[in-house]
Picture 1 (cartoon, rainbow, N blue to C red):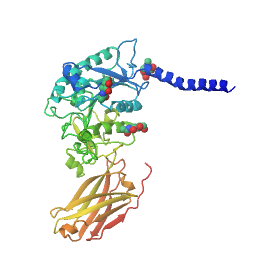
Picture 2 (picture 1 turned 180 degrees about the vertical axis):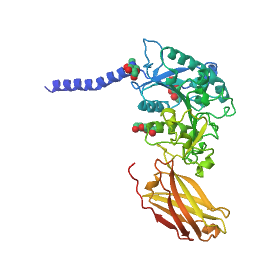
Picture 3 (picture 1 turned 90 degrees about the horizontal axis):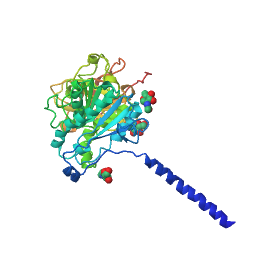
Picture 4 (picture 1 turned 30 degrees about the vertical axis):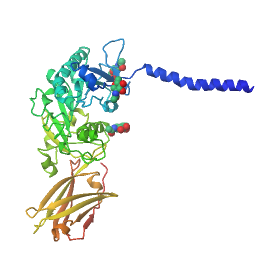
Length: 454
Ligand SMILES: *[C@@H]1O[C@H](CO)[C@@H](O)[C@H](O)[C@H]1NC(C)=O
Ligand SMILES: *[C@@H]1O[C@H](CO)[C@@H](O)[C@H](O)[C@H]1NC(C)=O
Ligand SMILES: CC(=O)N[C@H]1CO[C@H](CO)[C@@H](O)[C@@H]1O
């Protein structure tokens, strides 16, 4: 009997071990495609070849890309009745495959039932930047041939939405030029700046390339372009330096160098996820925006444009305006949203320059802002990226911090006001009047307020 028992045990064990192995084998028959990566050697041998490929992801295969093929016997899952999101990556300095493509595809598919068509032009996009720039129009032409074929199969040009990252934004722009602006939408995520800023609109992304063009700018002083290229152009934190990027001492050199540039992509994905609104305020310059000189979206009939997939960025005015510079502040990590709080402070004329520190407190959260006061000004306005809404702010404290350095005397604050923008409802600013801030004696005030149901 013990012998038979062992045999059964062995048999059970064998099933347990082999069954999953068979399962794994079956799964592998459905092969998932990856983007290419190229090496310097390969690049030198095949310099002239672009080796363009396309991958397809849909809601049926959101995590497993299929190589695009028009062969009816090997369908890639592309469905001509659905809208199509075309992802175009940018320059690949080291020939590596872009690692973020899968996440962007998944984020898009969660938000919309669509075909995601990924353009793999890693071979043409790697190593010498100036040579890559020479390639990009050829890449656009090849993609446009595919779009033409898809059009013949029943896809409408308006149903294409190109999402181009960095140099990919200009690839999309040139495809748009080839289709005379009839493509539905192009989104440029920090469109490349080097060799494009001074370029003719024929050579770079511009509003005539599609029915609607939106762009997000996050590194316009380095890898990104500093001029507006779309109907709406969101300049995050002024469009140059992003919070949480500049001082990440321990990040890798590569991460440090491209952190600002890649922020556009991360904010875009977060916006599509839809956990909080990222809206831009039209303004002529970031300096004006930071002074609180632009607080409304009147030019858009009160509806501020939002980052993400909503049609025309949520703009209702028509015809759609062009090259609108929009500004917003973000936080340093997902979901990146903040509240814009305008701090307005009016002081009585001062005998000497002074310094004040203003602190806002909400529960355990404390944030400070430092103000340098000059003798020739009495009004100070500054916009603050604050983590919670105005109605949640519990208290304000003002300290006379300049005392040690400037031997400054008391500061008489005529009024200190806080307001939030853009505001969904008419709200009075929170003001406190006639405050004496003495040396070494901070003044503070608790707000009595509550966020109503809205
Ligand atoms: C293609 O998409 C349409 C519209 O959503 C749907 O009705 C149809 O079943 C899809 N075709 C296939 C083969 O999945
Ligand atoms: C989007 O949401 C999904 C699911 O909630 C989450 O896993 C992912 O990290 C989010 N991505 C971003 C960029 O916020
Ligand atoms: C760094 C890297 O991902 N290298 C891969 C490039 O692609 C080849 C073939 O697909 C792989 O074998 C390498 O590991």
